[in-house]
Amino acid sequence: MADTMQFDLVSPERRLASVQAREVRIPGADGDLTAMPGHAPLITTLRPGILRIVKADGGNDDYAVTGGFAEISAAGTTLLAEEALHVSEVTPAIAKGFVARAEENLRAAKESGHQDLVDDAAKLLADMVAMGDHIGIS
Amino acid sequence: MPSLKDLKNRIASVKSTRKITKAMQMVAAAKLRRAQEAAEAARPYAERMNAVMAGLAASVGGSDSAPRLLAGTGADQTHLLVVMTAERGLCGGFNSTIVRLARARATELLRMGKTVKILTVGKKGREQLKRDYAKHFVGHVDLSEVKKMGYDVAQGIARDLIKRFDAGEFDVATIFFNRFQSVISQVPTASQIIPATFEGGAEGASALYDYEPSEEGILADLLPRGVATQIFTALLENGASEQGARMSAMDNATRNAGDMIDRLTIVYNRSRQAAITKELIEIISGAEAL
Image 1 (cartoon, chains in turn orange, blue):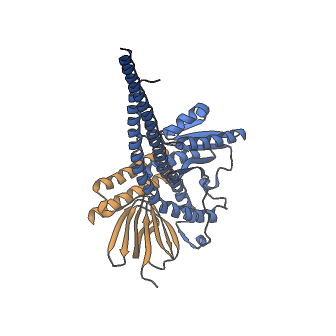
Image 2 (tube, chains in turn purple, brown):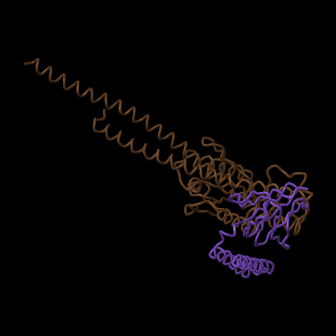
Image 3 (tube, chains in turn purple, blue):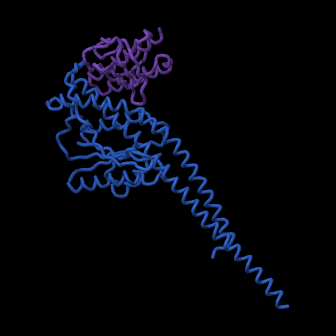
């Protein structure tokens, strides 16, 4: 079995990465998962979090993603992110912007009165804050 | 017969017009390159998105639980036409071809007794449609403040559309835009976005995937994104088309101005020579008369 697979990270505006990867750690909606070569075909939605790519040479590459979905197949892994930034590009201001937007969503959801929406938005906010903390530490 | 002075002024004014059209052509060429790159860069996302959704739609679409964005409202009465044009003119037939296509569709739908609603994106389409369809307008998206066509713009439009759809304002939404083929050829295109349709169709392999959380959950999450992606693609294609159309229109204008300057210069030189000859004749005949 090959020990690397093709990994593509694309956002609506551009292709961010297209590399050979040993493994990819994906912040899935139902929990983090690691895709390695030969993973069973899977499509999952994402929650905001950190995506870690372990490249063929063993080096790491981290990206902050705010949502989207990942497609894992025999041919490789493709991650379609709504917004994605290399962690080095995430400034405190950008992280604050994400959190502010999530808070805005939460407020709008509360006004609409749908409990589902409020829960979703609250979760999103928590994820955003956690992501910010993570980047702050690393 | 215009005087020499008139001709001179005329030539000077055509020359300055040529300078302007030449400059506009060069600006359009530079913007076109950027717009094409942007459209190119957005393609992988749109293609994957389309493939995944087509696969999902094929497996979920038949069931009763299919989301409304995919299955539609079951009715076909109210049509929303989203007409995407440019904010500026001077780009040849770019705006008119989109408007003509939209107008043809609107006329056809009205003849069939359907209700037509029109949402315009970009100022030029609004101006052209205002005379005949003002009472069908339901909204307008102003892009004149948008410096760089980003995904957030498309998301905003998509969110607005979905809100209207959820509120039951329309059954079918179609977007009108120009698909970029080359600098001299842009194809006006109508594409239905709600209920969702997919180009190509499902691949057979899609059924093999595991889905997390569930097929329905993912589909419900993806459909709004699909709408935004399609609008984003259309906006980018439109952007590239606009610059391409402007570039060729301004190229023509520059060439026409050049021809006009040549013609005017010939007339100018002829009348100048005629005036000199006339003066000479007057002098000679005056001298002979003595």
